Length: 129
Image (cartoon, rainbow, N blue to C red; front, top):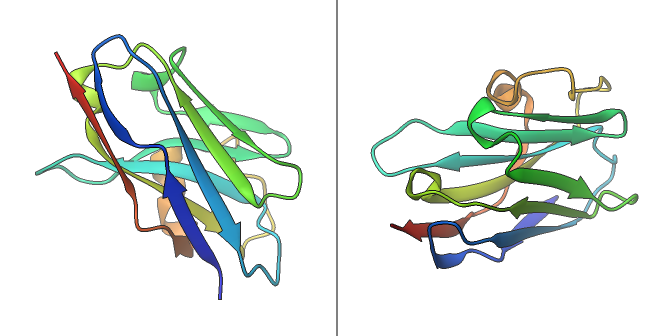
C-alpha cells in the first residue's frame, strides 16, 4: 500500500516562502506522474503542479512563484513556494499516479487530478496579509 506523508506547512506572512515535502513509501510500481493539489476552505480542490521525468506543469496562478521537484527514485516530492499570497492559503496534498504509463507534464494540473490514485493527508498552509 502506497503511503504519502506531507510536511512543511505552516503560517507565514505574505511575501514569504515555504517548502513542502512529501515522502512516499510502499511502491510496487513507480509512478510516472506526481503532483501537488490544494483545497482552500469552501472551495473546490485545485491542481497546483505536476511533474514527470519529461518536465513540469503549473496552474497559472502559481507560475513563476512555485517550483515542483522530485528525487530520481520518486520517493520524495517537493514544492518550493515563494512570494506567497493570502490566496495561497489551503490544505496542500501530494498525489501520485501508479496506474497510467503516460507522461503528465503536458497536462494542466487540474485535468489530471482524476488519474491520481494515491493521496496524502495534507499539510496546512496559511498566509497572512
